[in-house]
Image 1 (cartoon, rainbow, N blue to C red):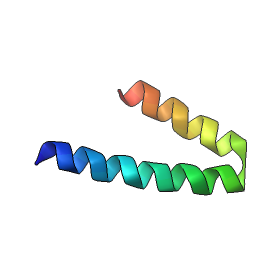
Image 2: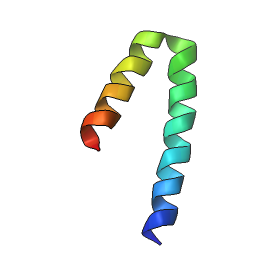
Image 3: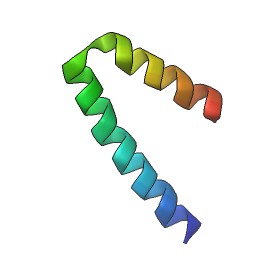
Length: 39
């Protein structure tokens, strides 16, 4: 169950990352840094 949730979160994160890439690389770098520190 928890594993499925992680997959859903990952998919959502990928969508957000793609949108951020279109908006600008600066936003993507901030998101990546937040993900790294969260882990």
